[in-house]
Length: 311
Image 1: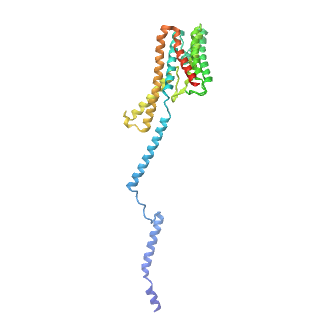
Image 2: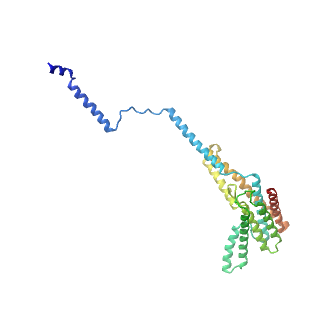
Image 3: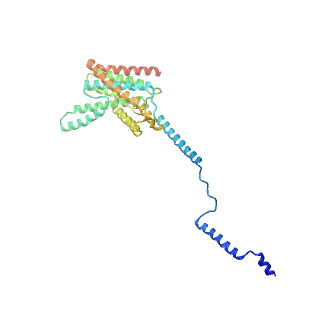
C-alpha cells in the first residue's frame, strides 16, 4: 500500500525523461553558437537618423566657415596711403631706370641683368675679347646697389612697412633723393651710375615684405609672377565649378576674395612702374640727365613730410 501511494504521487517518468534532455540540448546548442536569449536591440528610427545627418552637416559647415575665416585673416589689405606710398616709389624707380639706361647705357634698378653681364664679361675678358672696364663697371653697379640696401637695413629695423617708432623712413627717403642729386652732379658717368644704383638699392630695401607677399618697388619680375600665379589660382577655382559663382562654397569664395584683393595691390604696382618708365623716357629727351630731379624731389618731399609728422 505504501509503494502504491508513492508511485501515485510522482509524475510520469516518461514525461520527465523526455522533457529535460530536449531543453538542455537546446541550451547547449545556443551556447555553442554564441547566441543569447536576450531580446534584439530596436532598429534606429528615421527621425534619429535624420538628426544625426543634420549634426554631421552642421559640423562640416562650421569647419568650412572656420577655414574661410582663416583664409580671409591671412591677408589684410593695407591702408590706401600705404599703397600710394609703394606705388609712388615704383613710379620713381621706373623713371630712374629709364633715364640711367639712356644716359649711361646700364640698368640700375634691378640686378638680374647686371649679374648676367658680369658672367658674360668674365668669359669675354678671359677669352681676350673685352678689357676689364666693362666687367669692373658691372661689379661696381652691383656693389653700389648692395651698399644702398645695406644702409637701409641699418636705418630701418623692420622688413615691413611700419611707419613710426624707431624706423627712420624719413632719413632713408632723404638719403635716396640726395644720392640721385649726387648722380647728376658727378662728372664721370660711371660714378653717376653707381650713385643711382645705390639710391635704388636704398629704396628697394624700404619695402621688402608687405601686402601678404614679397613686394619690390624697383623691379617688377616678382610682381608679374604674383599676378600670374594669383590669376591662375582664381581661374582654376572657377574652372572646377563650371565658371558659376553660385557653385562656390564658402572656402572657395574666401580664396577668390583674397586673391582679388591681392590683385588690387599688385596690378597698380606694375602700372605705376610702367607709368614711371614712360614719363622718364619723355622727360629724358627734354631735360637729359637732369630729369632725375623729378624723382629726387618726390622722395625728398615724402621724406620731409614723414619726418615732420613723426615728431
